[in-house]
Image (tube, each protein chain N blue to C red):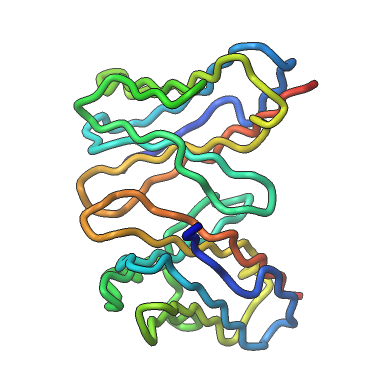
Length: 113
Length: 112
């Protein structure tokens, strides 16, 4: 049963701390998306990778957020330093080349106090 | 700028009823439209995808329709069950690019 996995599922941290969220895309998928979901803004696209290269990260606050794909099986989203307004659920999704379908992970619920 | 709206934000109906969820978009030049389901504490699951050239798609008890000219899509759920309780989101693509533009969702509760 192929699925996108995300760790951790929950993270509570204090303002100013570094947060790293990890995503393992479905094996063979070459596109990875990072989304943020809040009650106020709904779902927002933060970054998009294809074949491990970032194609669009315009939705991501550059001063504190960074996204990488060290290899084809791991995508990371890092926040440094974290702020209370970063509290949200962060979703990773992956897709196959040439297909529009995106498969979502269960999300990481981040709370910054 | 494309905007996607889902009304109502929440809906509660008795089990067994047929129901319709609505999605509207301001720019009719869409590439495709997709309906997703989100369960509490979980990610999103794609339900149906309608290409701009299509009028409807069906999967089991679900039927999604698309009327580009009026900027509307509906998700019809037949014989609703408590297990259908979830938040339903629609999203549109303006071209073959990946970018999805999301509605805020309709939270559906099916009462036993």
